[in-house]
Amino acid sequence: MEQKKVMDIFERGIVFLPDLEIESTKKPWYPHPEWKGVFLKDLVTEKETSGTFSYHLVRVWKDHEVMYHDHETQWEWNRIIDGKGVFLFEDREITLAHGQTFVTPPGIRHAVSAYYEDLSLLAVFVPALV
Image 1 (cartoon, rainbow, N blue to C red):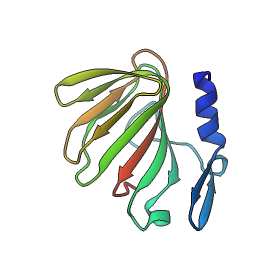
Image 2 (cartoon, rainbow, N blue to C red):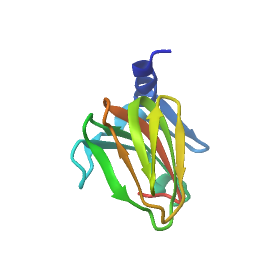
Image 3 (spheres, rainbow, N blue to C red):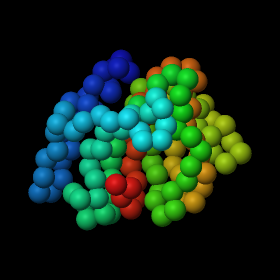
Image 4 (cartoon, helix red, strand yellow):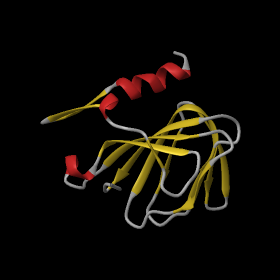
């Protein structure tokens, strides 16, 4: 399956929870408040999960990045669904491509750069980020 079609599936999909269905098309994209060229779509938030987890689509334009940061209490799980980039994890630099995942424990500094092309990923936070 072509990579662009995979992102389309996530953008047009439905998230099923036991008592709720969330249509991705009804959730807006918005620019990250701090990082230029980074856009977010909150599919599931703490409101729907009583704070247990949140689920987001993230786009990083080519030559932009999610700058170094950490999460005090959240585990972060990401799956690359489109594009290619670099995951900076403490002192390691890992090339990322479609289908790969990375997990970041609480308190660990990390960054994601889209050096090669636009990058799209699915991010899950436990407990919820927003």
